[in-house]
Length: 265
Length: 297
Image (cartoon, rainbow over all chains, first blue to last red; front, side, top):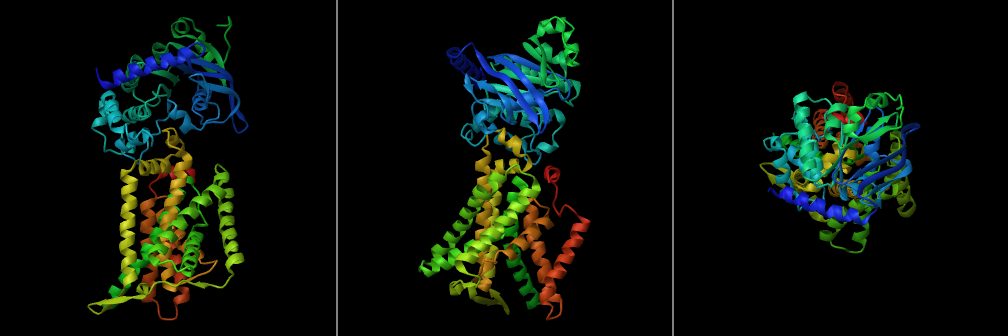
């Protein structure tokens, strides 16, 4: 068994024991979270919960509040109300770097790979200053998950293809050894075959015990892989539930368009 | 021939000083999009530190490192006291804040030391010259260039090899995403200011050694030259700043060599004329490859 497997197993058993000490086994929860961009409201009164080992999809059209919700979790936007709890502790208002240290990592929308840094340097920054001792070991583990990157280690991030950049962006997020990974539109702008590869990777991460939140516009693909989903429209949660059930009913499309759902799903 | 060699050495020494100043300005700008107009005051602070320590009979072997440290500490303090509260403010606000900081520091020196320039009792070796094949060379010019080459190499190694250096480059490209890597914004910015101050402190020694005087307004010329050099190179590009320093010094020395005697007061006008032409042809400077910065600015 490669080291990352044992490590992740260990991680997940440690985490569940932590979680058991707190109420339920929720890893991250948002309560009544509201945030603004200037005077425009981005998300309003969002209640959201993600449990250990789950993949939770956040669905919605452009501007529905998916990115803002993820940014609220990692402290990239100031909240005008509500709280974010992680592993039972209140992390509301902490700066992003502190939240990352606690084990949450965000792969931002549009990949945001450092174009003027090589693949290797991108991954090294991903390990943070505190993670430099563990960097060589983590680099090997991450390269085992993303073999494509091994041949590109000395290539500048800006010169990689879209698919390679997306893999680098996810790999970079994993360098901080997170318990919870947030992926913001990982399939955006990628060729269908590459999208498949990205979703395969997400499944593998889940199999290794990682908890994931996946913001996506690719509803079908996201519902296939996720355990549960929240559907956002104009900054509000319109619908939530198990993926299988959401796929069976036609409610997602209605919620997606902000038309509301009749029978209070 | 000997005259050409003479000008060449002048160029390398002057270019070194400008490059150090420009690099310091560019490091801060690349990270924060902030032009530190008080950068020249770091030279002034170094100068007064030298005066004060010399009065206390501290040996120059200590004065030099202490004056450099003073500039680095001053730069970190500027960030903490003046720039951190302005973080995230509109560009016009930080620009005015930076200008205000420069004026406040100048006036503090005016209040406490007076407007009269103070002599800095530089050690005599700074005035030494030696002769090779009929070319008279100032020892200090050689030291200036050699130190700059060493220091720039060290900065390059730092930026390419160390985790903090790589993080600094990452942050220059995308500050928010760098924070997402668990890199602490405040530590990063503090480090950038410290490095910028250190470079200014080294530049201060070589810059001040020529006139051996310091006054509250000493910082104006180093700021102007460093800023223009950084703009020529493409604000925010670090290699561009170094290049810009040598280009600016090259223009100055070339005009000194070719314009008739008595035109000295007008050299800057000629130099800036050329700079305007350069910017007309390349509005973002010689090495403005960082699209991310252009977007932010």
